[in-house]
Image 1 (cartoon, rainbow, N blue to C red):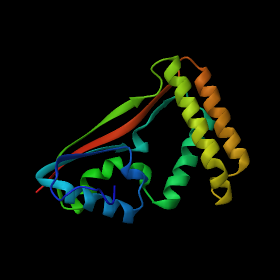
Image 2 (image 1 turned 180 degrees about the horizontal axis):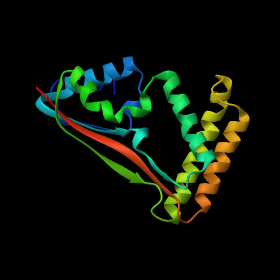
Image 3 (image 1 turned 90 degrees about the vertical axis):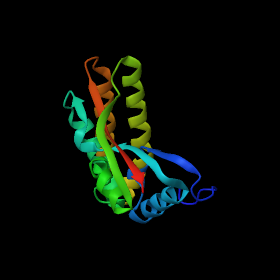
Image 4 (image 1 turned 120 degrees about the vertical axis):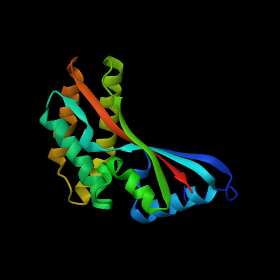
Length: 176
């Protein structure tokens, strides 16, 4: 993203999905400068990124809320406000020389049926098991918290009425 193998002005559009909020400020600056470089004048950048403040969750299970808090601890120790990137996309892109054209939001449904709930639990478990040791090593969590978060997701996945809609904010901007 920061050193694309394309000539200046090669593309009419660039699309980022669920990636910009993961970037540090310096990487984000280089990424957006590179997108600007490869866009033709008048070209578009479209983004779709997370905003944890819009997530919808049912039932209210302490362990699942703890898991969401653990992820927030992880991302925000690197970049404060990372999980609320979605709502700030227009202003961030404007600050990098783009002109906002449209913004909106939608949801990813991680609970449409038993298979999607099962996959949501599997994804949460993989993430917590991967990040857990790093969270503990950095003093951002305890082993007991990781275990409680895992148990929370297991309980959530067993409830056929569970709902998890993950908010994604979208933005379209133009390179002038």
